[in-house]
Amino acid sequence: MRSPRVGTIVPSDRLTAEESIAELAELADSAGAEVLGHIVQARARPSPSTLLGVGKIAEIQVWASEQDCDFVLFDHDLTPSQHRNLERALQRPVLDRTQLILDIFAKHARSRVGRLQVELAQLDYMLPRLGGRGATMSRLGGGIGTRGPGETKLETDRRRIRARIAKLKSALKKVRSNRRLQRARRTAVPVPTIALCGYTNAGKSTLFNTLTNAQVLADQRMFATLDPTLRRLHLPSARLALLSDTVGFIRSLPPTLIEAFRATLEEVTEAEMILHVVDITADRRSLQRQEVDRVLEELGALGKPQLLVLNKCDLLQPGASAQEVERERFRGSAAEVVSVSAKTGEGIEDLLKAIEQLLSRESVVRMRFKVPYDDGGALALLYEQARVLERQDEPTAVELVAELAPALAQRLVRYTDGAV
View 1 (tube, one colour):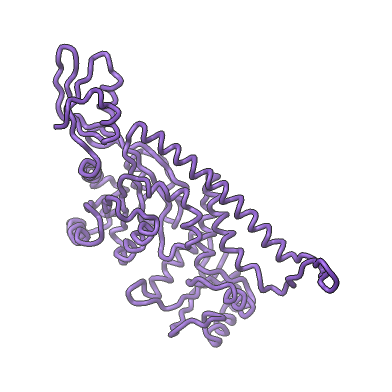
View 2 (view 1 turned 45 degrees about the horizontal axis):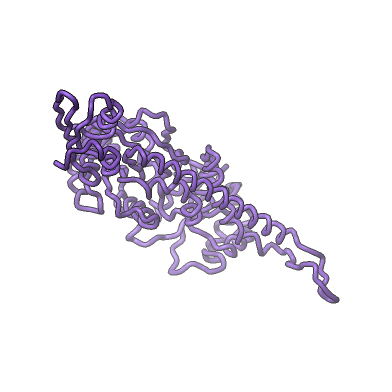
């Protein structure tokens, strides 16, 4: 489909109008639309009824007719009344930024849970926009003078949507409950969980594939990866961790999506640490970091240990990535900064070492163990889940010094010979 874009000037401390329009063009491309052009209007304040001025709307109407476009896309969230008034004035369908993002999510949702979450966000967005289309809101009364033509289609649609929303919320509540049980089972065999997050199109899925040898879809289009994926990550000391890939964030991510995707985003809130992936070549990466941190704060996960991963360092001039690392080291809340290229593998070993060091610093105790030779299970568990630092073979048992998670130390408490 083809669509022009209509943008508004944004404050200088955020993206400029042209940068905002360029981001919207990427979203439109991800949705499969062909962009014919764009028009920008600077206003002191938006019009409550139509967002734009009367003259600008007339200009857009003429231009859209000449271009024979299918719909007009606004880089702005429209109120229900603005949406209706603009469609009447422009004489063609109108979409806003939130509608476009919801459409992309719907396109890329593959799993049952992903489709449920997208549908819930779409219905939450649609419900307040059903009215105002000339339908009479009358019902059957219970006495003389109160009998109307009956329940209108509009009210029927609203009732059905509310019922469907309630059903979706109930289904997603069960999903969240099941995932809590799964996380509890994983905790029984304590393996740290690491969540990948970042601005959309920062290269999270490519990095995920490089670290875990997975086959997750990696695409230049925004939100190409939507459904969460969990894979094993082997650290340099042979310690095991779990790495989760989550949906990318974006400027002004619709609140309906954040709420609907709670079941998915809980992987971030439950993780021991966060890998915040940033496109090192992005001109506005500091703003992108702020947007990601804002969403993490809304989820209650901003205080978690965070490792900043500057991706796509292969696209920089030689030596530039080291300078960028030093520059970013003093910004934000990341405990460590590493530059990598998920595509070429450059810096991956340094990233794995940084992950292990941060995990050790945050959630590891050093203990001495004495494991009998006939208890191979406990010995194997130590080698698989802990970092063995020393080993001495005695006549009846193996004495080990290891760094491990407190929960694992508690499971093996009968073998402990004291803290080191």
